[in-house]
Length: 544
Image 1 (cartoon, one colour):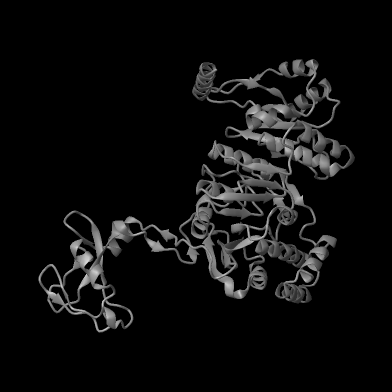
Image 2 (cartoon, helix red, strand yellow):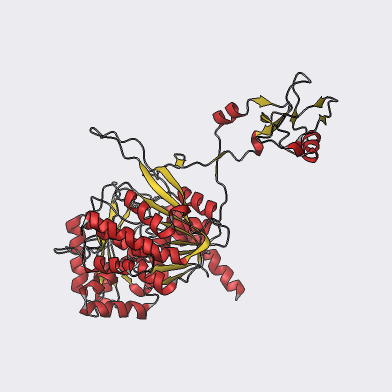
């Protein structure tokens, strides 16, 4: 199957691209926040929310024709339990935002159930806003008998600003199988030093820690009721229930020095369990050992709903095997596909924003330089970019899609795309250093000229930004290049100087991605990078 990244509404992608019974594991973190729309939010270098937000679905969770259509599809889906449950919910809730959300989710859960293999599992990650309703929907779609666990993840630390109530510091992850024969690899939680000393209090002369455990069978087993003469010459009698192992295994334990002999011959023979052979504790339904992503964490991408890779690694490792297919239909910044790639699984990611797709592409290529995947639904070459831009001349929504896609190529955060009011010449931002900023202006038209470069220079000065990026679909004129060069260089002490105003073509961005933009680099890093490129060039010449 390979690895696939899809841009588009996941309902359409699931129906058109994903076959029945083809996916081994599904993880989804569907958006719902009682205080915000489904936004892709980014944070600036200070940690505060960007003033701009891309609203992927302006009316997604309102009762509109789309919600009514989704409701009708569930009613005629052939899944009587899901239809009856959604009808009861509508009777109780009426036509409000929550009901719209549940109708949209119900029709997608039916598709997710269809694509899941009989041995597959689904994990749905949510917060308390709609978790109780989602659990009922999951029971209807997957069958209550296939509910496995309600996992509670401690997603943040104590809230000090709670005065009237309890701090909300946990998320819920519902775990379902499609059938009883699901894939399962027991996860374990490693013990810390204090726990090891407490659980394994005894120590051999070679320093190995151990504890003794009973050899008594928990049930009555007459076939395991035999006297055993150990290597110390003492014959031990079993418990009335019998031993927990047969004679052959008992002898092997003895030969390996794993039997713990009691001080009295009449005492109970026990078994040594060594700390260095233990996997740790079996993971239970409370996950408080995977911390949230800190503000300084290397994996942090500025995506507010980003989950730690360790969380997804646990899920992927527990409910899939190497080579299996993992699907995330709301893949956001790509943590699921990152974990799947790291653990040797195939993966499918779907998201409805160009910005998310671009972010995932960059994340994967940075983390796994040799990763192979195919992106669907976004321009892959210059002709595709021109087609998207041409559609934007007739439909403003397509124009905004072109801008968002172009920004994603160079890893820029969005400006005021699609929002009411003027964008003030700021289509995107790139933050660098601690407080520095590059302003991006995107142009999809054929008529670009030197006046646009002057305008961008004025925006840089007005906003007190350090750098301006003119991202253009059309090749720049010589007068534009000269005007940009006249803006001079931006310099930081200890860093390489870069042009203050840079013209980047979409063609270059398609090839070079974020490397098409020149940002200050430490002089020693730049020197090392130049040396590596020179070595690669020399090696290429030798190969020829």
